[in-house]
Image (cartoon, rainbow, N blue to C red):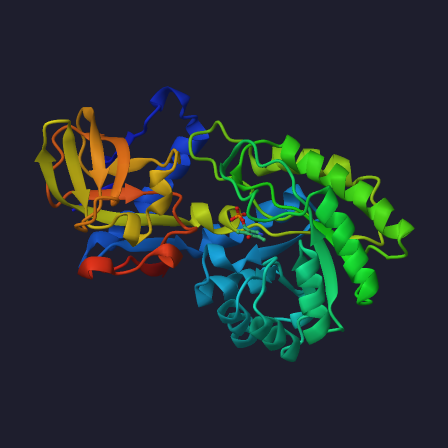
Length: 391
Ligand SMILES: *Cc1c(COP(=O)(O)O)cnc(C)c1O
């Protein structure tokens, strides 16, 4: 069985691992190692204490910014309850996420519907349940909301740079200058109030300037909105706050410092909020998986895990510097990492693991509390990771 003391940190770039990050990884692995008893399928081990600590740290770093957890990052019911208990509000994008808010008994006036493109049914459903705030980034959406829920308050999502984000979201969403004009015109035509401005810097954003530029653009838009007779009351800083995978990423206090400075000249009448997803849940979760088999092929040696692209590891196909920690000690080698399915896209690049890795070894993946279980399915009959809460 895995012993916390017996794990060796395997990282693509060990020299860059700073002590704090390494200790954090060790702690996450130690907490998860106990979950290999009676192991039947991959397990995402989530720490309740860490969830609470993450919220508190976010709030301390940005006292003026009210966090609304982006439910999509991990919609587990107990996680939502813990965040609610810590004073977090929520951000949703779908009917199912809205229903989760109803089950939770969330105050609907603080639930933000931030998906810029919403189906007519979902707008109706949200209106019926008392949701007030809706994001728009097109004039079509302004008209659609006006027809279904004329009581709605709108906040306008502007396009901002996503440079330096591991998972850019620009392109799909965000209004450029021409779209902003069209949205303002539509809002006037349909008598809908534009009450706020939002932006999203892209997920796992390590470029602090993106928030600074976003806030400055929002201030300019506030002035424009006022000149059109609107009364701005909301600044929504979106998500994107990064995890510390290898210590190169800015920590939340550094990001907070820059954001707090930009907020100084924003009047008290403006409510400032953010929509952290990954930051609040990511470092609270460590995925436990097991090696199915190793294989020597012409090009390289391969490790096949019992979970992969379909089992919550989609982000590993991108350039995410996740650490893989084996229960086995020994010299490290570069392996091609693959999932268990028979699909050729189920391959996750090259990663370091012990050279003598073998079937049956447990492999831990810290910092996977976000976008893992929620993105997983049981394609090809391989069970998706289950989520297990621990203290
Ligand atoms: C996904 C998303 C978030 C959360 O992003 P993170 O990178 O997980 O912080 C916040 N707001 C909106 C509108 C989103 O789509």
